[in-house]
Amino acid sequence: MTQEAPRTAGEMLARAREFLLRKGTAEPRLEAELLVAHSLRLSRLQLFLRLDQPVVEAEVARARDLLVRRGQHEPVAYITGTREFYGRSFRVASAVLVPRPETELLIDLARERAKAQRCAARVADIGTGSGCIAITLALELAGSKVTAVDLSAAALEIARANAAALCASVEFVEGDGPESISSRAPFELLVSNPPYIAPQERASLAPDVREHEPALALFTPSGDPDHWLRRLCAAARTLLAPGGTLLVELGHRQSERALAVAREHGLEARAHKDFGGIERVLEARASPAPLSQTVVRDAT
Ligand SMILES: C[S@@+](CC[C@H](N)C(=O)[O-])C[C@H]1O[C@@H](n2cnc3c(N)ncnc32)[C@H](O)[C@@H]1O
Image 1 (tube, rainbow, N blue to C red):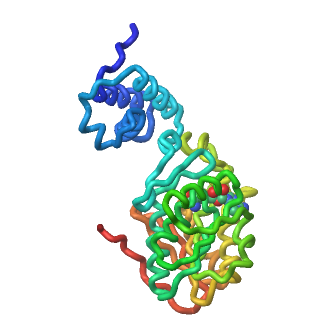
Image 2 (cartoon, rainbow, N blue to C red):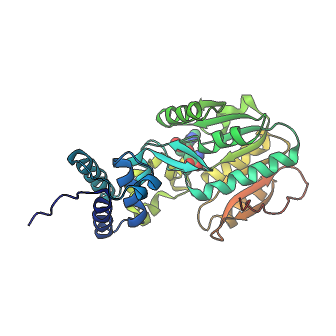
């Protein structure tokens, strides 16, 4: 027996929740709200204020298409085309990693370190993807000069569109790793959220990630989990200004190796925990000055 089409936004929402629950997606309630709101061209808040609003056939069909895509584990951010990062909306598509909330710790640390330097920071972001780190730092650090690199031309196109939409001034460079911007050195801050998953771990990833996010953004080259750590620590020695700081996002259980690699390169190093208690960011510096304490996020 075929089910009658939903008549109101509220009925549509209830059906969407049931569907995503059956499909076993990560957060069926929230995802249903986001996708139904998107299909009705409403914000989530507007959706809740208009649950009695009648819906037309075209809107039901649009929602159905979006829900089927989510049922096939396509990330919600790719379906809606946007993701919030550090309070701003970034355009995303399948050429870029979906910005993650844990990466905001890297921004907090960069802000703290830039403030301590008491001069306008020159910043380099290696592997910029959507541009979320580079653009956020350009907007948060007054007077900063930000250069962002990616190997993917498709990712850079999205990053440039985000910079334009958010009125951020960032120099984007299509290049291979930190070496490609050595002519622009020195930098006070070298930041990166590099690919840090070993290709042999692919099968253990959630299907949303494994089947939809770009391999270039996820996996370390040639199966070496420390490829990017070594490369960034080596680059820090030549690209950083005296007293400058390297900040690198780390994968799960990577921090001990990260500290060892940084120290092998003659850098002072420490790791910072994220909200989940996971050592998430490596901070390293060439200067002998001791590294200061972990920053605490503003509660505002
Ligand atoms: C984990 S994603 C991070 C994206 C973004 N910075 C973020 O935090 O959401 C890593 C990025 O590094 C880029 N990448 C991979 N290999 C690279 C290379 N050899 N040189 C420059 N960028 C590279 C990928 O295209 C991807 O955009």
